[in-house]
Image (cartoon, rainbow, N blue to C red; front, side, top):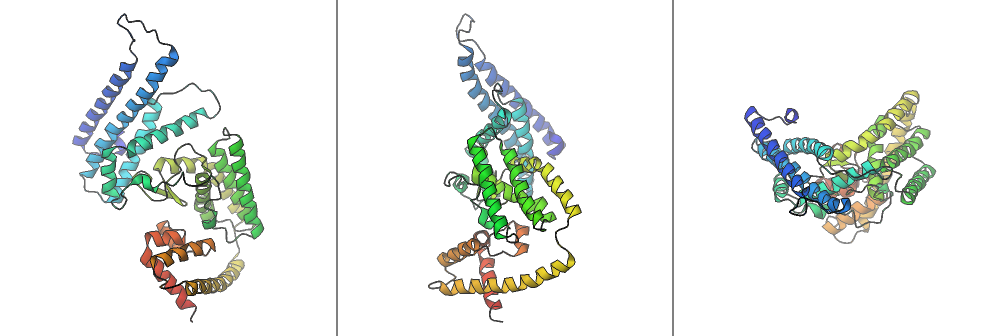
Length: 390
């Protein structure tokens, strides 16, 4: 493991000692529950009674094993005075590696009773790991270090406050270039996929991801608007949003605000690094397939691009006028917090496009722009108001 942790020679020695200590504690904890239940050395318990004791004890020991090593690494990384983003990146790599080892070698495995049992068991492990970490004081100290603006990580989780639907975030998806009928087919197709999932939970989430990807990519391809950006970035983000809204996973479906654990953005929400890796890996075959379509049918010709630019200029002016109309309809100071919130929500509901350069900062909606860069949100509105006066 130490090869990708970037530790010094002295720290590697301490690291190896910490791993040995974690291994020793794990063996002690698991051996303790494997003993007999009477002084004669005869175990009179049934296999189910023993499992009822062994499984939770082994799960706790596995999490303690992971935590012992992880918190050692966090302490070592923190001493290096790294920038917050680099510290977070190193911790992400360490946590992903420890998660993989702990689940494979320490986590108690059940008997495979139905299709997809391994995936569900891994999801249950992730849910237990997330809850365990967020309840640890050591993890809270680390979070306060890298994300001091977030007082309570669990407060950013609204997954239980919505009815499950893959359409929860559809108003922010980049579907403007598609016809009304195409958008309707996407919505109907998403509900069909969700219905099949609700009817048969053995229809795994990875299958749902791939069906959503094909559904959306096919509509853009039929419209002649499929691009590299859509294939590699935007459609995977739509898939992530649909999966989060539909609650297709046992584990928490990301967070609406970043935390030290949910810190990789994909679409509307923030996820653990391994969760994003799993989704992109699950879609690898689909992205490869649709990249092949791009070779045979590029999205638009130069002439059509020129027409698109001319239409885009007219559409932008019309959008600016709509913003001006909305601002004029607000009572009182349009820059008040209440009015700015109303304005951002209205612009998203009307599918008014955000500036493309904002996407470099993972901002895809007006509400997000207001939440993360309120000063620039006001400047963007002022710019649009100015354009209507020319």
